[in-house]
Image (cartoon, rainbow, N blue to C red; front, side, top):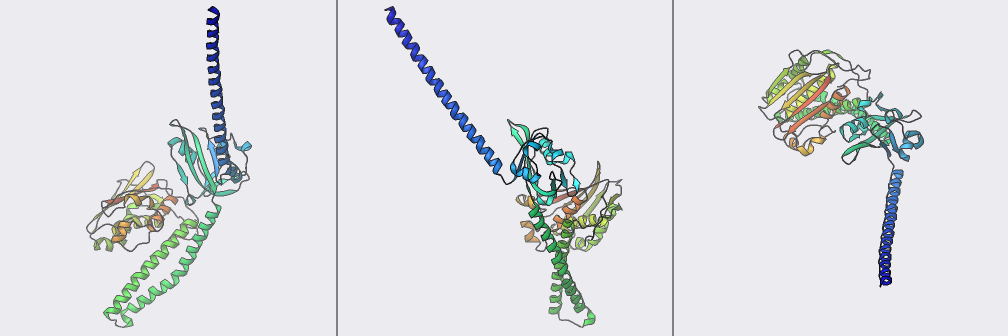
Length: 407
C-alpha cells in the first residue's frame, strides 16, 4: 500500500511538473512570439522613418537630438553620429529672412512649453542652415511628443521648400510685371473718360453719360485691383522702404476719417474715435500704417448697413500700442474665419451685400502689421459685427531701405 501510495504521489508530481513545463513552454513561446512581433514592429517603424522623404527629428526635453532620419541628414548635410546628442538650437541654426530666430521664439521651445503644434508655411520665410553654411527655406510641423499625458520630447518634420520658394518668387515677379503693364492702359482709359465727360468736349445724351459713368467706375475698380496686386508683390519681395518718424496716431486716424467722409455721410454711419489720454507719438511709417487704418475702416464701412456704428479705439498696453476697429456689420461666418487673411478671400455672406471687392486688403494689412513688428487678430459673429485689433511696438518700426513705397 505504501509503495502504491508513493507511486501515486510520484505520478501526481510528475503530472504537475509536466503541466508546469508545458506552461513554461507556452509562456516562452508566447514571449518569443511577442518579441518577434515587437522586433517586426520596430523594424517597420525604422523602415518608415528611414524611407520618409521629409526630414524627421526627435528632441528630448533638453532640446537634444535623440533621433535623425536619413532625409534630415541629407537636408542638413550631417549624419546621425554627428547630430545625436547635440542641442538643436545650436546645431540647427534657424532664421526668419536674414534674422536669427531667438531661442524663446523657436518652434521647438514654444511647442514644448505650451504643448502646441507649430506649423511653418512657405509664407513664414523660415530658413535652416546646413553644416556647410548654406541656407535653405523650410516648411515644418513641430509637435509635442506625449506619453502617459506627459510631454517627453518634441517631434519635428520638415522639408526643403526651395522649389516652392522659387515658384512663389516667380509668381510675385509675374504679378508685379503684369500689374505694371496694366497700369498704363488703365490710366489712358481713365484719362480719356475724363476728357469725354469734360463739358468742353461737347454735350452728351443721358445714355452716353450713363455709359461713361459705368466705364469710369469699372476703370477705378481695375486700378484699385492693380494697385493692390502691386503692393502685395512689393511687400512679398521685400522691396518696400520703411521710413519711420514720430507720428500722432489720433491725427493719422482723423486724416483717414476725412478721406472717407463722403462714404461715412452717404451711409449715415456713426464713427467714434477714442484714444488713450496720454498716448505718446510712435516712431512709425505713417504711409504704411495709414494704409492699415484706411483698409480696416473702409471695410467696416462697406460691410456695415446704413445707420450703423463703427468704433476706433487706440490704447497703450505695456510696451505696445493697440488699435481696435469695431463695426456693427454682417460679421464673418464661423467656418470661414480661418481663411480671413488669405489672398482673394471674401466671406460668402458679405458677397451677397457688397459685390465689389478684391479680397486682397486684409492680406496686405496683415503683411504690413507683421513687417512692422506687430500682430493682428479679430473676433467676429455673424449678423452682429467684427472687431479687429492690431498691435505696434511702442519702440516703433525699424527703418529699412527699399526700392519703392506703397501706392
